[in-house]
Structures are given as structure tokens and as C-alpha cells.
Length: 232
Image 1 (tube, rainbow, N blue to C red):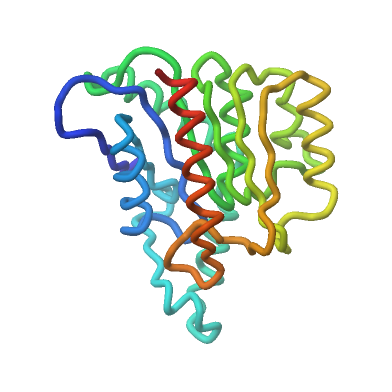
Image 2: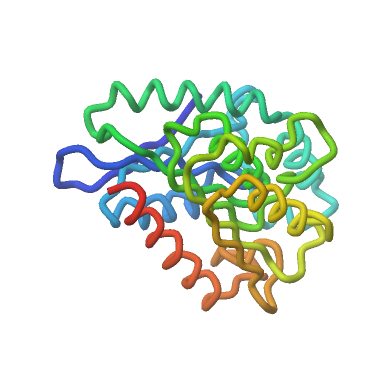
């Protein structure tokens, strides 16, 4: 699984965070996010979650043009993943980081956007002793009717969650937020959930038309605060 590691230049070891990519996959914008996280004194691992399909790279302009077929290929790649596959990959990443001298022993964090909102919640419940700070931004698939729905793992979560949703998101059905809150509350999970006013799916990414700088910057502040409290 091709992955990219980022950490401060000073040397030494740092608390680790995994950034799970969104559906468009690996690109410089995600590298920029990793650099921003690393600047907080953290080690960041960015895996190419589509590695089973080869080296998949999607051009943003082609995705916006429905005649290219690129958008359909992206959704096919996204749908090739399952919770179990990504949790297997997460175990591999945890093993890798345990042997990397740049990674400090102790609690780890993760952050996921879009399709990976489900995977960071799954990671929190599958590896509760590892992940103590988990951020999901406009995550999809967190609450489903399937037996492996991430919200069903709430009873196992021991870390803190930050969940940021867009106020206008066709990929998040109306039942998701109340059902998710009910599961977290019932199991006394520590979390903060925000629905950001006047935002759309993708509002955290500067290259996207829905980008909302104020909301995106406030999200970064909340996530960094959580990382600082839980990963130190």
C-alpha cells in the first residue's frame, strides 16, 4: 500500500495521525493537509487506499466534466472499498508505525473526509486502545442498515470524536445525525458534533467550489485542539 509520511524536520519522535483520503484520492491538496497537521508537531501517514486497483489518480477538471467518465471511475474505486478491507489496511498501518522510530509510542489520531468518515469511526471502534482522537468531516456511510455499520461500534469506542457535517449534504440522509448521536449518547462516547451553517459537502477543501474558509478554519482549530489534548 503506497503511503506518504510527514513529520517535523527537527528529528525525534511524534504522536501519529492517519489521514484517510476522500473519494478523489491522493493529490497535492491532501499532501498540503498533511503538512499542516505535521506542523502541529505530529507524524502523519497518508495511505493510498485505492492501491488494490493500481495507481489511481483523478483529474479534478475531468471529474467535473460528465462526458469524460472520470467521475464514474472515481465512484467505482470508492465502492471497491469495504469497512473490513480498510480495517485490515489500518492494522497494517499500525504495524508499520510501530516500527518507525519517528512515531512516538502512545495514543494515535485519525482524520477522514467524505467516504472516509465511516472508516475513521470504524477505526475508533475496531482499535479502541490505539485511536484516542478521531475526526470525521462530512462523512458518509457512518450510519447504514448493514451489519458492519460504523455506528454499531459505538459501545467499543474509548477515544474522543469530532464530527463535522455540512448543512446541505445529499450524501448524508436525514436519519444519520440523530441515529449517530443516539448511539454515541447511549454508550457515553465523548464527542462533539457540529452542523456547519450554509455549507455543502466538500466545504473543507480550498480547491472545491463549496469551500467555506471560515468554517474550514474553525474545523482545523477544533481538530488541532482535540489532537493536542488527546495525543500529547
